[in-house]
Length: 123
Ligand code: FES
Image (cartoon, rainbow, N blue to C red; front, side, top):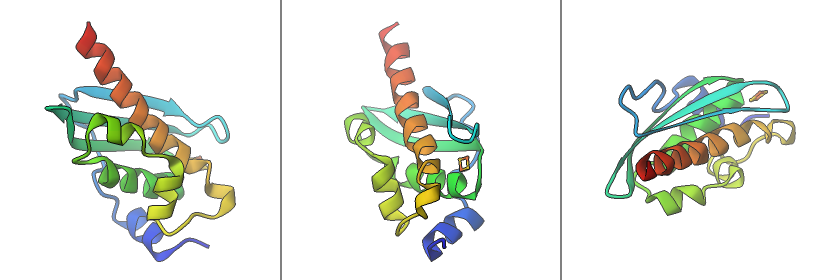
């Protein structure tokens, strides 16, 4: 079963939506279920000052995305790159084993958005 924290983030997702002038966008798909995730980031002085998400995923994907944006906000890019799906699941007081793959979407999307930002910065 889902923890209270998962249910809370599912019912009241934090940071849901788009950042129209995002500095980086990560778009990833989940090979296990085919669901999709977009993560948008805003960066200032190497710190994530804003993080938002949009997902076409299940309830666990919504809750893990919501938690990921909370974990990532205010972190440096290096620190955010180290956020794992395990960290996200742990912060939600666990996920059912069968739903662990859902937390890949958010963590992978965040990392992809940071890589997108770094690539754009180089160009
Ligand atoms: Fe697809 Fe959860 S079942 S992200």
